[in-house]
Length: 302
Image (tube, rainbow, N blue to C red):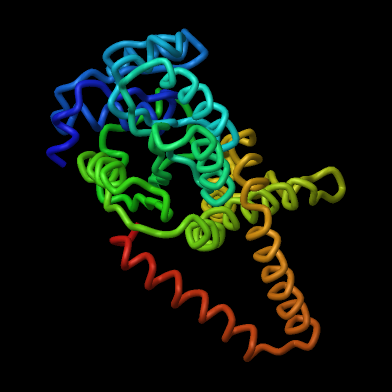
């Protein structure tokens, strides 16, 4: 973590929930360098400045990147390769070579695309390290940012054989500095595991909300009778549709396979109901209960 304290300037491109929380966490944990907020919307950037999530803001790419040692891309996943291309074009005119990283929820397509971009530039191109902090909220924007958001949270790093070792150590130090617990996975392993652990639950929550909203009879809607069960089961569906559309499409191969698994499970359970197989129905529910209880205990009862 000493490497982070030696940095003079960290640029956070996209100062919303994750970017804002990172900026707040850097200051909370004693970062002495300059935190630069870069983005397109000056109003949102000024709000980040008001929240003390960054020290200075700009919409000018050259101003935001000049002299930065580390650039953290906190934008939707589909934008990251585009921004990397802009950074590379800027850096080509400079001697300074920042380390680049991101916070995206998908990795295979993103990392492969960026490595292809950098390969075209040769050995003097910038260095990129894929990262995914497993922390967040259904809320968006810097208003929801928290200095403690990453404390004890898993942060997955996804290096490849092309990843620079020093850059990997720096990005690992960054997330340890703000309280996260880094894990190393390949981009492909990340997408499979996180597809099941995060992307599929979000999809199911969204489909559940839509299904319940469409149930009505005699002018009365099922939605009007939902309570804590519906709230708890669908909370994550309140997340940004734009953000999750990008995540689903970038991890579509994994998600399609998981959807097949869910369809198979639903079909099997449908058969159990049709045949009044009470013993098997109870077994399925008990198995799920045990899984959930054990995971809740591992997460401290969350």
